[in-house]
Image 1 (cartoon, rainbow, N blue to C red):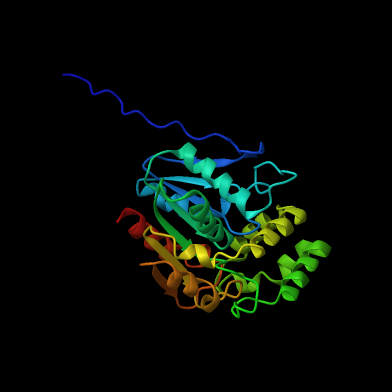
Image 2 (cartoon, one colour):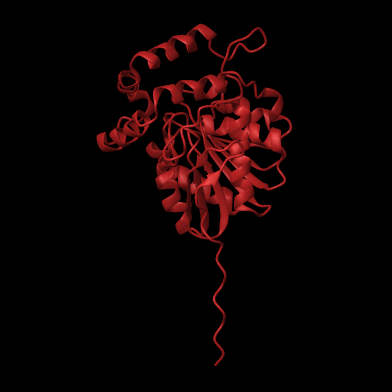
Length: 280
């Protein structure tokens, strides 16, 4: 009997060279329709471990990016601005290839996705999922009463510049649920502590400088927004609800009792909702 030829597999992505030089570390796991993951502020691709474990078992290729300066990507001297972050994502999406890439982000990663779509278009993108988005605009202005005053953000940055580990420890509880294991909390806090304070500060300043409200109305891809109603880092009423309202046809799923770290505290629900959305 004839033996069928083995199916060709796309080679896994290695480190990706960004447009201005720094190397970006990529985790590329399994085969199938590609899903590119964007991490939260001051976290790296490892934060998505439990989503990757589930979705790869469901036949999806999971590609997770370490933002420049984070994880195993180069700590660049420059490029900590939203345009460059969007360009870095574009480089990764182009390397993944195809015209049906899904994008999944958490917190600041959602802002990067929104800006990427506005700056580079959605030609390669099929769907987007935004978890607890730190968007559309976090600074209070005359026409944006939903944001926090700039002085509030500046005070937080000053704390990071003095003792970033102390701030992480003092503010970790609201990120998690009461039944989150101490080991899980320690793991994610260790990931935060691994990000250099100058990188965390520069990245957050970049987020504050970008008003994404105009970009929302230009998104024309199926969009799922997931957020908890106990999110202390990015309150639902000023972030996720406004993002979902601004994107035509977006679906908003609100998790009762879920905090900002819902990707671990409500892991099973997040994984099931992402699977259903990405495979539909």
